[in-house]
Image 1 (cartoon, rainbow, N blue to C red):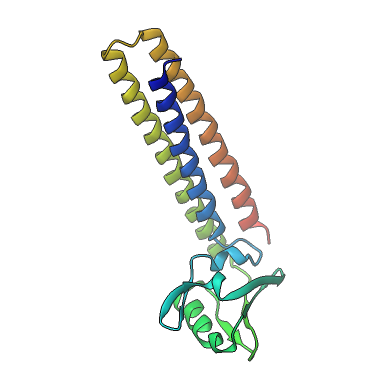
Image 2: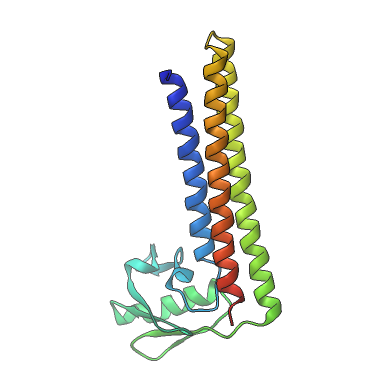
Amino acid sequence: MNEELKFIIDSAEEAMQAAMQHLEEGLVKIRGGRANAGILDGLYVDYYGNNTPLTQVANINTPDARTISVQPWEKAMLEPITKSIQAANLGFNPTNNGTIVICSIPPMTEDRRKDLVKRAKNEGETAKVSVRNSRRDANEEVKKLIKNGLPEDEGKEAEAKIQIMTDNFSTKVDKHLEVKEKEIMTV
């Protein structure tokens, strides 16, 4: 296979893989029926004047299905951590017992579950659009190569590989969404 074609296909696959990774990161942040330390990913805390990721100033655990505990490495960080979690507006209020910050995750109502499923589906649709855009871009590059003298059968073969890759990634997105929907709707 032509080196340029191989590069185009590999680039398309990397872009599709990045879309999947973005989807996975987005789905982790959507709260399911259980407490998940991933909900707090992406939170930053004021650490002596610097905006620092929460994971770099504390241990985060889930002792049970309805609780997330955040144990700071320094007692002085209790208040900034509590404020950061409150400011994130995650749907629960943290409490500070003097040594750790405890986040009690309230049970979700049926309407809230349906809203979260919609959010998950929106994340999935965004990922699928990104995958399709990667396919379109790769196919345009293949067409340019055909115009510049690449044999047409090689171009068609590359487009077929790109389409198979697109179908595989779309199926992966659907499977991720199915698992997440089941997790959210489980009471």
